[in-house]
Length: 410
Image (cartoon, rainbow, N blue to C red; front, side, top):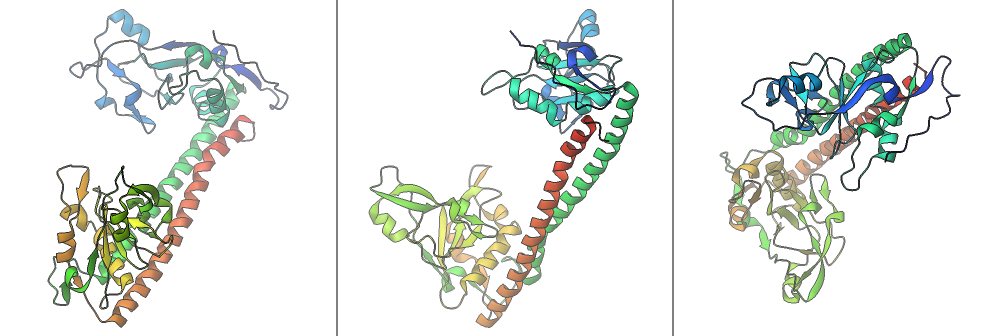
């Protein structure tokens, strides 16, 4: 049995406003039609939770359903209706129906039809506010899969100004939220452009291994591949093992180290030394080939056979080797060259690394290249951090605008 939510004290609301229950400002709140989606049926469309993606519906892709004329009439969606996800990962999320085709809604959705006391735009804006979500989170039923039912939705409370004020507020919100969306899109585009800079900088310096270049030698001739062994559940030694999560585009990340077990005889051969270059040997298509140089901390760390260890030797600076191998990773070389039967997991072999042609300029030139690239990458990281902070600020704006709107401060 659902307990009615108490109407809060409305003393803080502007003059002429009241605190109303959602059910009191709606014609009805009801559940959708139970049927099977049928892509061979053109109409009516059968709107499901999964058809609502990123705040929009592609009506062309929505299936139809078989339904009687009487049931269709009872479940037909109209302009201004609002539908809610009853359960699952999107519980409580809403969608405002605008100029729908001939369509009905499925049973895992709740439909709300506003009355003349509230405009669709105003009440829909409320369903995006923190006030609404606090009520959802406090009262949604269920554990791992919380749900919202029609009675609970109807018992929620909202600030309610006169209709003319609702229209004014909704108009301001529409304009301001559209501006926020434009700002978000611009910042996201700038961030994507910043993410593309490392590959561009590295392409300016290096040519790919498949391109003709006399100043190259196979890695196996100038470097040494070191042993790495499998993690063993029954191993007699507890070790701190490097995982591929340690290998990031901004360097070695020790937070990816995990405790594991390995045979003692194997562990002794797998302890990683400072300045070793590590490559992700086996990973997803997007992450295979990631590379980082081990800084030396924490000491005593071992590498499993999910990584390939390289000792640069005397003719290659480890920082230069890392930079060149990073070039291969960020420009997609290993996405094309890595093997494996699985479409999602790819592998690089030691033979591929041994035979990989690598430029071997003079040591002074290697160091100069590393300094130049490092300085540019540092600026890119600063730019990305700035843009992420900007996005974080933009992401907070809708909640702030909605809070102001429902406190009568717009």
